[in-house]
Image (tube, rainbow, N blue to C red; front, top):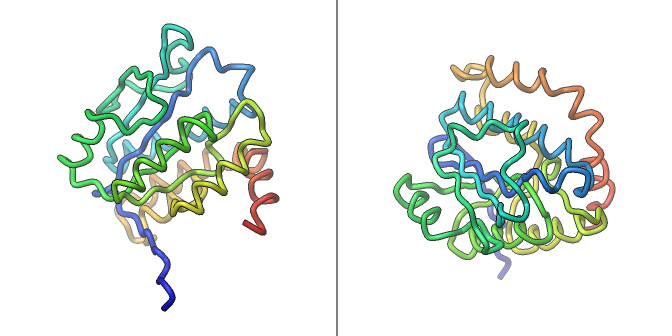
Length: 207
């Protein structure tokens, strides 16, 4: 008997945005790091409009520094240090339960380490996970497609920031549609030149 696929539809009121370890020491080291920063900013702006809580982590900031100054995380409901690779920490798990969260949108680095382990932990705990393929990366760009494939095979939904924003509003009559549409337009040129999405879309046809 075949198993029906997970649809994993998403709604703002039961979602959270996870921003994973986008820190100062990774500048110039992570492949296409500026694109990761851009996508994180895009999603944080949209989260403010749609009242989606933002969770931010920093992997051992004593070594890797704080979240890059280009990203404003001042409104994050959680902004915490960690040594565990996964973002699924007890404080984060409690927040998700309290807010009756069903879906997590995931952006950050590194795709094959902290992002991957966060996705797997969330899936294991029955959350829908939406990985933004244009907003995750690694030092070695060859790791990205492999990490994406691993997350997809585990049950994560692989999507893009622009697609996600339209999924969140669903209808042009939505009261926040115009604001979200303006964010999409603001980042349109950056989306067109995002090499991460170009690599992932070219490398996932047979995954």
